[in-house]
Length: 236
Image (cartoon, rainbow, N blue to C red):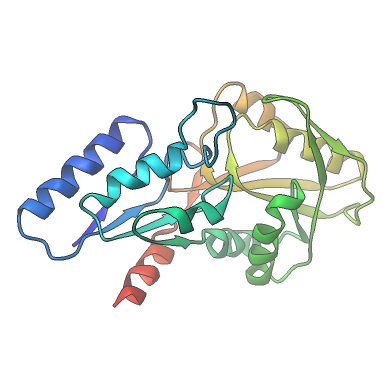
């Protein structure tokens, strides 16, 4: 049985566990949980003494009844998937974003920091455009600083790709730097669009904002259903 359920907002986690338990009680031999957005994935280590490793905690509960987990873009550290107590595969949303960027005729793709470079590289392979990254310094949870870096973006349409847009602060700062260097158009894209706090105000620095359907929002313009369908078929 393939069980498809998000974990956003929080009550959906309980629904996922209840559904898995009911399916197992009904006699299912194997359950594959498809969780497009894996809540608490950002808490992949103890930042302070006494904190839980929330990503592993949620995975432990899913593993009670599920044999496999398919999920998309654990933001903080994709390597955390290897520590989960069930077979876990990360499905990439970058091909879908790359297709959108190709149709939007962007000239170059950028990652807002070096950590997201692998995402920009993957999307650029589909979009057929070059990629680069910006140098980011995080001041605190809400403030980031983009270090000056010369980019060949003057007069060009530029796409910024990331795994998550939360407050939009990083994207806004990146967009402002690109404008300062003469970018003609800036499109921001993410896999998981949370858009919390002052995100909408921050993102006005961009000409367009797109997100996939892992979390539904007014910016959802890309479906990752084909990516998950392919991953399910590959399970055999």
